[in-house]
Image 1: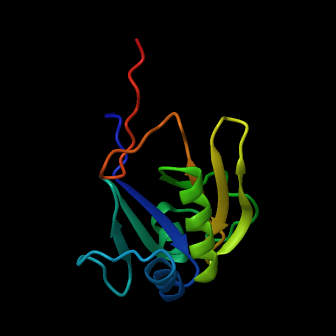
Image 2: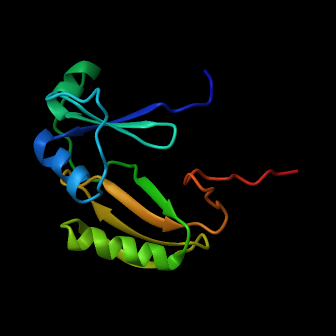
Length: 144
């Protein structure tokens, strides 16, 4: 298998509520391929999809109800600690729920967490070890 991730699909309880969150809070624009049944957002070399959780569970052949920690987070990296503070404050003003205020973290960066309407964790982070290029893609340093 090639080392690649092309699509992340989040199963959501209420597609319209989640669509509105990503449009109005994050300010993202859905792709033209979005429909009333699924919403796609083109990101840096990957797509994020919102899909009703019952439909996603049915497609995967699993039960739709789950609870507790989901064992993953999604990360949005920025270029400075100040940008983390600013973005978290802007997202909170637009209705995002802040789970953890930005702070210095054990791995040497600076981050905080917000939640989307389905309690998916979004880390807003500055990682001094993964600089971003002009497009917002990470520039992974080469190891010799």
